[in-house]
Every structure is written in structure tokens, then in C-alpha cells.
Length: 208
Image (cartoon, rainbow, N blue to C red; front, side, top):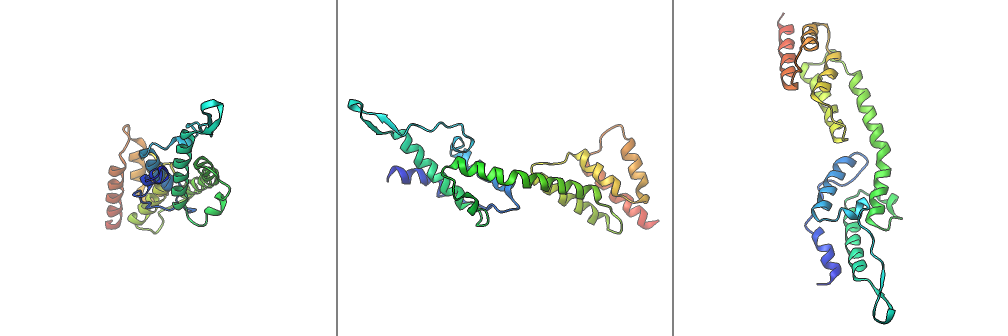
């Protein structure tokens, strides 16, 4: 087996359950980083690994190929190939000028940093505008949970207190008791307990 095939071998059993597209950058990034770190190749994408000199002085002062550089290039090329195979066809054209794994990584980060921020802002605005209205309690809470899950996937999770504070303003007048109890409590409510409280109040309001 040649050194080149040996460098590529660690990637042969690394499956990619997520392929990068315009909607899943943070999930893709997490999966890919874990794989790269497991192979101790993170220096290739975070810029901390110095690139060895391509040539060194051999006997008689002649320039010869540096074995460390050859090994570096083999591992970097294998990593580049694996990264590109984890990226959807809609993203690949933006990476055609990338020559190294670091080039690919930095380009992807620049492509998605703005879109991720925009998505997070949109999700927060959606949360603020939600109201229960004629929905069942289950539908209302599920809608909020879905947006919170999306925020967590974007790397911007809500705390339990923030989650509760999003639910409260959207509740109708028959939930005034719930709002009063929660907002006047001296101890923070756990989300699970708060949801149960909402369900009980919802059932009480239907039976009255």
C-alpha cells in the first residue's frame, strides 16, 4: 500500500449521514468536525497546522522533496476529497477554486455565516408573533417547540426560562391565572412543569 492510499484509508469507513445543503449547515458542521477531530486532522481546517517546506536540503546542499510536506499534502488531499463528497451539488460550484482543506472550510463558513444569522433572526421574530388563538394547547406548544428546535440546530438554543417567556404572551385571557402564577413565582419554573400547568388549565377552561 502506498503512502497516498494509506492517508486516504481513514476516510473509507466514515459515512456521512448529512450532506451539506442550504438548510443544514450547523448539523453538517457538527458531524464533519467530530470526524475530523477523531482523525486528529483538525489542524488542517483551523489553520493551526503549519505547512512544511516543500523542499529541504539534502546531501551536498541539493534541494530534495521534504517527506513531511509529502505526507501533509497526502492527508490534506484526502481530507479535501472527503469534505467535497459531503457537500451537495448546489454548494460545490462555490468551492471550485479551493486548493486545500482550509480553503474549503473557510469558504463554507463565509457562505453560511450570514445566512445562519438571518435564519436565527427570522425564527426569533416568528416566536414573538405566535399566538394560541383557536389552536389546541398541543398545537400551540408544538409550534413553539418546533421553532425552538430549529434555533438549537442553528446554535442558538433558548433556556427554559426564555422558552416559557415565549409561551406566556401568546396565551388567551382564560390563562390569566397561569400567567399570574408563573410571573409572580419566586422560584423559576421548569419547562416540563409549566407545560403540565398549561395543559391542566386548558382542560379546566374547556370543562367550565
